[in-house]
Image 1 (cartoon, rainbow, N blue to C red):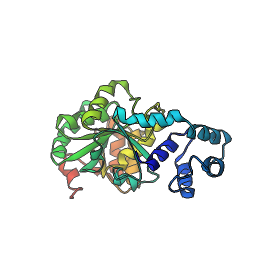
Image 2: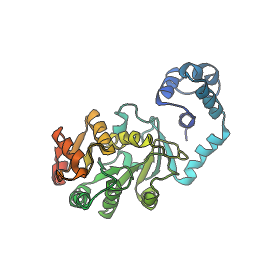
Image 3: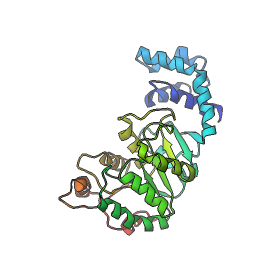
Image 4: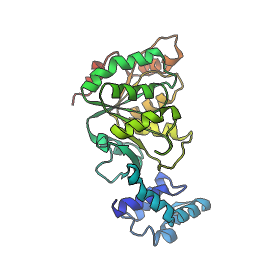
Length: 291
């Protein structure tokens, strides 16, 4: 790992470090030349208001343990990819406050190859949702579409599995770090994807998942994708957060219509009312991706 990338990754590991703090530090020290010298005394206090955050950052910046952790990631097949590297997803750079560092395990070439489609939906998927995926996916995979989802229970897991079953490629974006796959029921699937596909996170590998991280990771799912397909979703669903991120970034939003009496179709039907494209086949998605 180049020295600059190592320093940025180290900074990213510091407790209490926010996106804006890193931005302000880079503005004052673009090459992070003084991170271990003048920064603790001059730069860091200027970009932090809380004294406890300041102390934690200074402590972590002088932690050999953290540096050793970062050096050992490669032995576990983990790549720390900073926003300044060519492997970083081009589409994600176009989003609001893209992660400074992505932690990846698997085939990182998938980040910038082919066309990515985010597929998300209810954690309580029904037969209808599964059959919709089984109907739509074969043609998408045949055309080289890479399926992106969140490795959650329900529609996410079905989407990953169907992509693999159809000999396609898939990317999982998780909350928490790569050493803490959640839910446990999807660990086997995650490890299979780490071998032959790709799993990524914006959090250092030892980070345990927290509730607030799940909606945050949705911006990455939509951010690396040209479009987002919602299969099943309740009216107040995390999947709708992903759709909203897609809309904000000017990406395509697709929705599978559902039974008006089913709570699992409330969100998708509302999206269609709001302008999402109603889809019943792969062709109706592919025609929006002419290139």
